[in-house]
Image 1 (cartoon, rainbow, N blue to C red):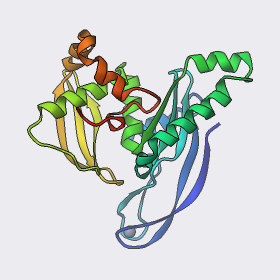
Image 2 (tube, rainbow, N blue to C red):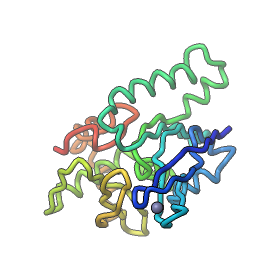
Image 3 (cartoon, rainbow, N blue to C red):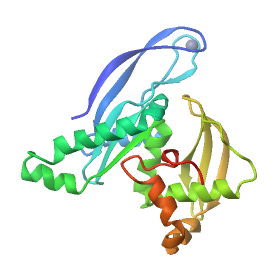
Length: 226
Ligand SMILES: [Zn+2]
């Protein structure tokens, strides 16, 4: 079952109000259209009825895809500073739903699910892209770390995030995004082979890997960039 409700939204450009269908729970096995809408960047996006600005309600939902083994809690970007509490809450909810007193079949299913938490649409979309391209999401964060170390520009603004945008034949295309609206600032391409190079030298990346994947929040933002 996928659950959706209408939510009011005020256009930041002109002040007009509109309604957006907001999803709280997605079952991608039964409603694969939601998965595609997240990948396309269309979910919970509308045009302002007055000025036609593109508006999007941030995610606050649970995303389950049993066939692909994904169980993701997605929050708005503004909740990022509370990731530790949200991670603990997510682990408790997962425990209650898929372990403990759950029926055997449900517990078996839980064994096959990776639990993740994400912030913002680009964070959720990134996990779906990793899954679609068979990329280990922790290794992807290490690729970002390497790219940031190699970059001459320093991005230390807490409003900025680096997210995977596209997987090309020989490159990973990232974008720097700003603020809750996730406005694209600039692209950053790195060689696709960096994934293999990092995985081929596990000892070199061991500490960094631990620092970004100690729980369901597999993300550079759980550790300062060292
Ligand atoms: Zn408007």
